[in-house]
Image (cartoon, rainbow, N blue to C red; front, side, top):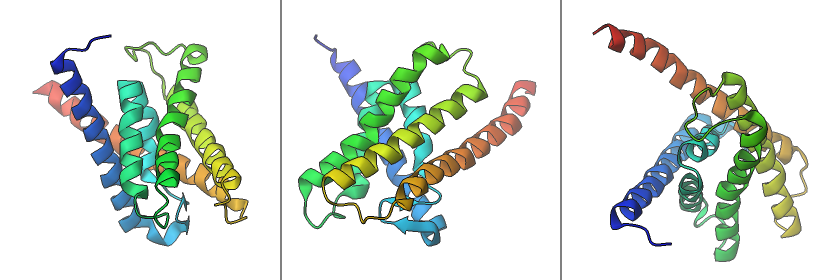
Length: 186
């Protein structure tokens, strides 16, 4: 399959934009909620989690690769020089939610255009991504011998992903509700 240079450039810029947004949200999360960090991989509020379903719904596999790159930017240097571990963590962060959203699209009847996407669909997708991330990440950490034997970490990641996504979705929807009616009246 041959892609045009314009398409490759657009997709590359999309990946980079998503990665930078992830990185920025990760740092904002760290600045605002560092006291709520359970471990280096588990936060009771994790704002970047909103990027998982949104990037994948909007950009498909390109969005997933943006998440992978963004996650890599945030895990690089946190694993005592274990590059394979860093790459695996990054891959899980982008590919597990992509799989979750792909599996949920059919039963939720979400078209590629996203027309008819309901708040309940968004809630289900955020919950599914949080669950897949919590179980998948901790499963990998357990298998690889990097889990600190603290089972509450699964709950922490799940709750943190849900709360982070809920906070940002509320702020986004509030901003849109305020901005769009004013914009339409002009």
